[in-house]
Length: 320
Ligand code: 2P0
Image (cartoon, rainbow, N blue to C red; front, side, top):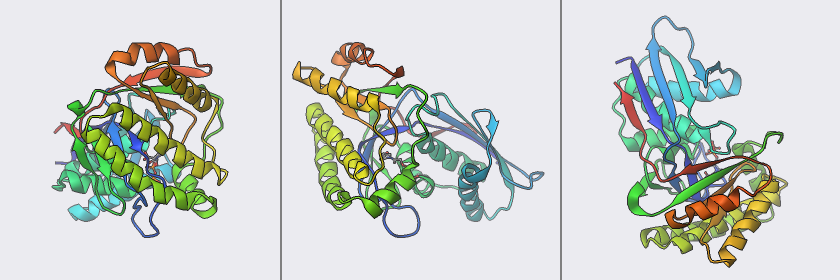
């Protein structure tokens, strides 16, 4: 086979990954636990072609070059090494969610690429190997190979499922902060600066594994309130350590959104906030409170759109 198409969903870390081990291969320094976001996907077609002299990448309809292309080529080189092939490929990848939405497209992107490329090259990688190769390109991508609730332990090659998508009643709102923001520092660079300069990086490394273990236990116990509290605490601790190094991803939507969900809780509605390497706000709630939480979030200024998601499935081949 020389061609394959794969689809993968982005994911939202409940217990965050922030910081890398000082060794080759892009290994996280802390364990993380995410929910795979159903309803949002990246679809990637890989076609090996003897007529090509270099890999080509078309992302959302536009040809990509430079460092973005190089990251994909590195993945393709690993696939070629595994297949004993020297063929170059055309990669066509499309997201059905806005790329600048604060939902990491690298997670679904590299999960879909690892799966499609290995299948197109005829190498028989199992899900753990696909996850490990995806992690090397982008650590959060290791988690998007699996559906439902997924963990990636520190220093381990691949992620694994903790619970399936139907395990828990959970609704995720992504509040996309309006345009006009300058581009944030990349996650890799933000982590590097945090590790090098933050007086609170040690505290983060100390807190994160305990937060992860408690959150994992809350998930298995289906304790939504506990899970939400721990997810919000993980995000705040991650950002506190980054901010102390001058790495500020927070914006007005993050701050006003955090205040809003805290007020909702005081009024008796279980909603929890989390943020990643951008100004967008993600809110966790349950089915019974979803309409109320959505209506409250609609009052936030500078939100260009609200995306609603629920736990989704694993990365999969969609065409032979
Ligand atoms: C996460 N983030 O656990 C954390 C929380 C952002 C904040 O993983 O350097 O693109 O490519 O391994 O996976 C985003 O970082 O970083 C991320 P690299 P990645 O989802």
